[in-house]
Amino acid sequence: MKAYEAMKQALDAEFLRAWIVNYISSVLDMDKETFPTSEPFDSYGFDSAEAVIMAGVMEEEFDVEIDPSLFFEEPSVDGLISALRAAGLAA
Image 1 (cartoon, helix red, strand yellow):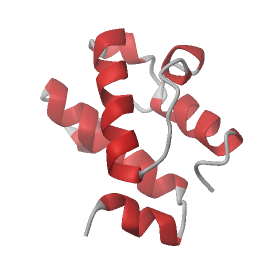
Image 2: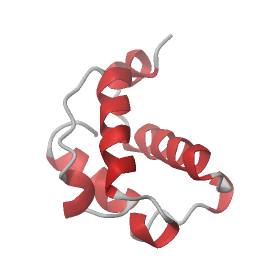
Image 3: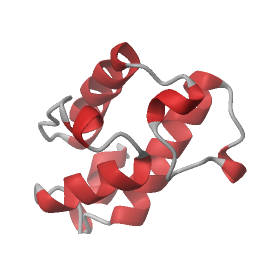
């Protein structure tokens, strides 16, 4: 089952948060258990190129359109979740 199938049942912000943390921590080889969700992406080396790639992966995985500019407007995992809620992509 693709992740978006589970997400379509309940666009859950905590599910999205866990997915984002898992994705970034695997890309940057970070400990997901102590991941700094309130710190800016660039503070741990997640740059704009990685953000655009992640937006594309999220679009494929969740079958939604993600504007990469959200990563710059809300440059932390917590901020991104808030922006996704505001856009109606998370509950």
